[in-house]
Length: 325
Image (spheres, rainbow, N blue to C red):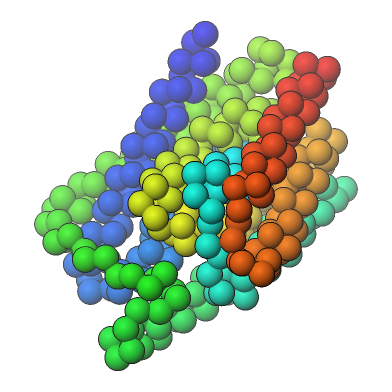
């Protein structure tokens, strides 16, 4: 019971800390005159993955590489199965051309590669460095392209990058509020990550469940809440492209930045319990290609239901594996 309360408390700190970091980052960008487009493609998308980053870095620093790996894999499965599936059930998701050309193909390549590398005997830091390098190159290209696009928008108007709309921005907050928000958010993320990591490790030990299974289920669901909430709210407001971008972008951030950094700090040992989650993650990523390239370029409600069903079957298999271990 104590571990469960500690875990919930850690998640609460992660969620509120993540929101503070996103808020402070957005207002700092506005103060500095950075394009709202760049903010949406970088700071906000990365900010919603801040809970995963905080928990994984703490876990890696404490030598819990398996828990960190489980969280990355579970968060990606949650984004592709639960979040996209739920959003598509609420409203069919329009797939923008840019996602088809770049992010979806990159996700369909990067996640299976991550699965293969993580299951290799003698997994090494070079693999984590490779994933991180790919993400850095992709991020640099995204920022460059977004800056170029923002200049073009001034001359030709909205484009597919913004879904055809540019919402008016609220006035930026004062600098002292931004600094307080950023420091407070980082502090909450650090404390929340430590509490959640310790609690998850304690629960796994008490129940006799492999830490990787705890990370791929309970921990990943908790740390994916910011993405889920953001995507559902976006879909309810009709911003389906924002929901798609957030879910796919979070997967890339998880695989490249989070796994890359934590893998450099604490390379996980090959774990047979991760075979099924790795297969699910790879198949869901590959399934994005035929889903997104349909004639209507929509993730329909039927496809959303299938994504949700796949996530439910994954949870059922994980529960069976946990009870039989």
